[in-house]
Image (cartoon, rainbow, N blue to C red; front, top):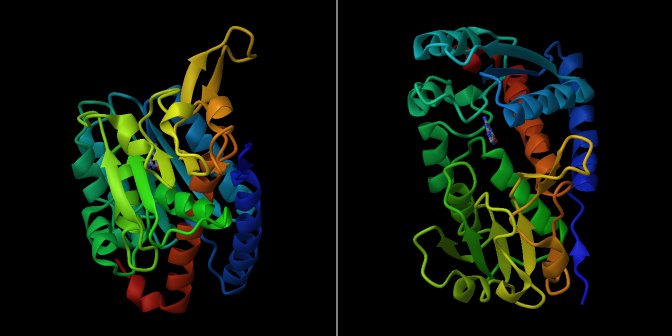
Length: 298
Ligand code: GUN
C-alpha cells in the first residue's frame, strides 16, 4: 500500500488565496490587517520562522511590524514592547516567537498580550475559551492539523486519535480540539512517561506525532490505513545538503507511507498550514476591528 500524501503546501496556497481576497475587502474599509512579531535573540530556527511569517504577511497584503531584541533583553523591556503593541490600533495580532531565553518568564510575557490580539492563541484567556468551546483564536499548528485531517477526507467522529507529545503549543490543544462534539474523536495522549508507546500508536486511526524526536514513529508502530500527521520539524546534519542539514519529521516517512492510508510530508505538510492559520487569525482580528471599532479600544 502507498499512502495518499496530504499536500499541506497546496492547501495552504488555497487558503491564502481566500485570505488575500478578504484582506483586500478590509483594506477597502480603511483597515490593513497588521501583525507584530517579536523575536528575542538569534536562534537560527526562530530567525527563519520569523522571516517566513513576515514574507507571508507581505504576500497576503498585510502589514508586519518586526521587533528584534538582543538575547540579554529584560522581561520588563519585552512586556513594555507588548504593551505598546496592545495599544496600537494598527496592530491586530501580536506574536512573541518561542522559545524565549531562559532568564525570561514565558508565562508572564505571553500573559501580557491582550487576548483580543493573541493570534497565537497562547494566553490563558484564549486557552480557557478554547477548552470550554467559546469563540477564540485557536492555536495555529493544531488548527492547521485539523484542516489537514479534513482535507484528507478522514472521518474524526468515532475515530481513535493518538497524539504523541503533550506540549502546550501542539499536543494539549489538539487533544482539546479533537474531543469537541463536532469532531467527536476519542483521544489518547502519549508522552515520555507512556509505557508501551507502540501498543497505543498501533490502535490509532489518526496518529499525530508532535514529540520533536526525529524518526520516533516507524512502520511497525502504525495501523494499516491510518492517517498520520507529522508535526515534527527537526534539523539533522547532512554534509550533502547545501545548508549542512536537512529537515525531517518525527515519522520515518518512507517506511510509514507504505503502511498508512494518508500521511503529511516534512517539509510541505503541517509547516505551511501553521503560518496560514496565523494569517487567518490576524485577518479575523482585523475584520472584527473593522466591524466594531469601539469594541477594540484597549
Ligand atoms: N515557536 C514554535 N512554534 C511557535 C508558534 O506557533 N508560535 C510562536 N509564537 N512561537 C513558536
